[in-house]
Each structure stands twice: as structure tokens, then as C-alpha cells.
Image 1: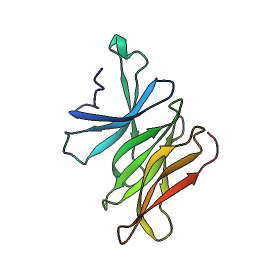
Image 2: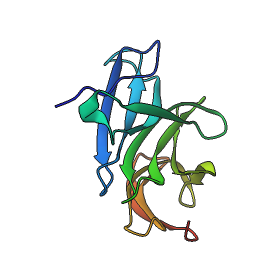
Image 3: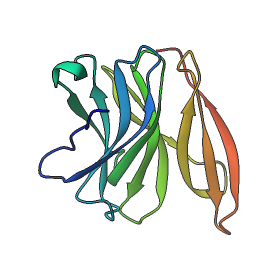
Image 4: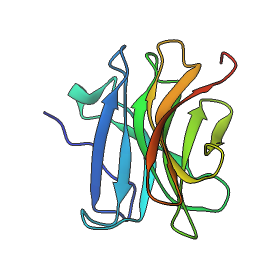
Length: 146
């Protein structure tokens, strides 16, 4: 087992998904384990046995103050998660290498969403969207191939 470093000056990190080629891990960096202020990361771990691991911040959607990565495409070039906005609602996102982060929005009449899965070809994002009464519905978002 190898530790994956958080971004400085953060002190905690969490990993949630590994690419099929075992080169990348998706997760987050945070001030501490209790903090809700997180930054979505993708670590390059191809040389982890030599002690080399490189965290890459995926950023936030527009208006975001926090983010967390939950799923990663087979080759690591697409990452899915959610970003917390300034009003503390959440938005599912898809991050694509070389393009950046994209807000996937919410279902009609819903107020927030979370991304938690990505298909083998990187085109379909799965997650949940929540309405004003706090009731969640699963969603599948289709995107053009990357």
C-alpha cells in the first residue's frame, strides 16, 4: 500500500476509483478528514513503486468552492464527480483531459446533482439528481465521444 499525497497545504486525501490501466487514481485532497472543502484530484501512479505519484487538481465547476472525483474512465482521461457551489448545492461534473471540467447540470425541476459513474467509452455519466423535497432520481447523461 502506498500513500497518495494531498495538495499542499492540505493534510488529507481520499481515493475512490482506479483506471483500468492502473495508471490513475481519482479522489480528493482536503484540509483534514472533517473538512467539506475538497479539491478533486487525479493522481498519476504509474511509478508509485519508485515513490513517485503526481496529483493533478481537476478544479471546480463555475461558481464552485469544492469538488470531489468519484469515478474514472478506463484510461484515466475522463473523471466524474461533483462540485459544491457557493450556495452549498452540488453539481455533477465530467472532467476531460486536455479540455477541463464541465458542469452536467441537474434534471428538470431539481436543485443539485452528483456524478458517480462513467461508462467504458467515457460517453455516459451516471449519478443522482435531487429535487427541492430532497428526493433523488438516478440519471444518465450522454456526451459526445472524447
